Length: 369
Length: 92
Image 1: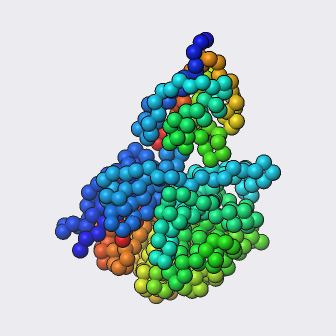
Image 2 (image 1 turned 120 degrees about the vertical axis):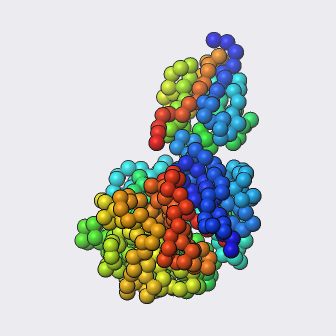
Image 3 (image 1 turned 45 degrees about the horizontal axis):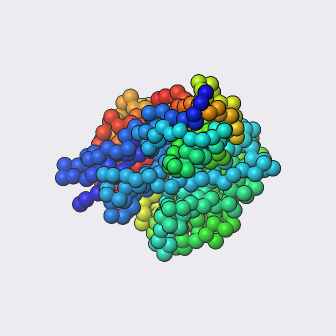
């Protein structure tokens, strides 16, 4: 059984292949620059978004399995009109109309070949219908009054980290925003509305705690075969939706913690989801220094701790929101941490192989299709 | 000073994009950069942000002095001025 994982890190892109003896790193590419997001495609294609500290965001694309890369066009924000006011509501500082980070990158539906969606910091969603030769800002969302209520979370400015193209209808697009909640378009991006009723921010003033716009969803993922199921890791905890994100239920009783960033859902079983918890927002490391993944198989009624192969003492690993992925079969799961540990399980989390504990801090992990 | 202004880039940028030193007729920094990007279009996105200002972590000097207008690039050039594009220090 073959398989490939890509890991985007603070200092480059790595390819990890399944060998007879287990998973091993087979390639290091784009060394020296942070890779904030990547998108593997068919036939050895992989697109990597770099966040070059000095010289801006760049997109590199390989068509030969990460052997060689060529520079590709990046999304560009339009000129900001002088009479438009765009102020972060919390920081009270201007939101720059300038690409800071490519934070999500997804292909459109199979009926729209060449379509790409790109979510960015400071909050613009971009669309391409020519496989990234050209990008257009989704103006309907960018100019939406509700968008101006978004605020930065861990980053200085808000960002779109999750893009879910509905498997039933490629004109239905849902996005997760930190901090802006969950938004949906049912007309291929022409109009947008906030959803995610039921999300709760305990840390907000009580009158805003349940306001859907502005919620700090860390990551949202949709079940491929049962797309009514959307799982979310939120700053406040774990939420699950049974109506594709319109309404959400909070799950509060999870050992050892409900705090984290990453979540994956099984592609066929909407009741199976995985998380990698930290203590809580001001203590972003595993409870008691023991790194665990948590798994539910019953839609969140119960969870089990998965520990076999994970360090059970003095682990201070945090898994970022894009740091975990599940393959198309739903059997293989990989996650990478801020400490540079990369773990893979080929049995849905029962056993974990440590592929490396010396990688740079890991931002993004994705299986090649 | 005599001659035309020259523009030179930090060697750190050559790792990312071809950016040879050029001598270009220009009366302002904006004219100089536009002329340069006409020859080397890929360099633009490395130096300027989406609104056309100098990137936050890029530093530009004219004859050894920091430019004043990082947004409008209106700083004047003399016939023999030397424009240098550096990266500001930041680390990790």
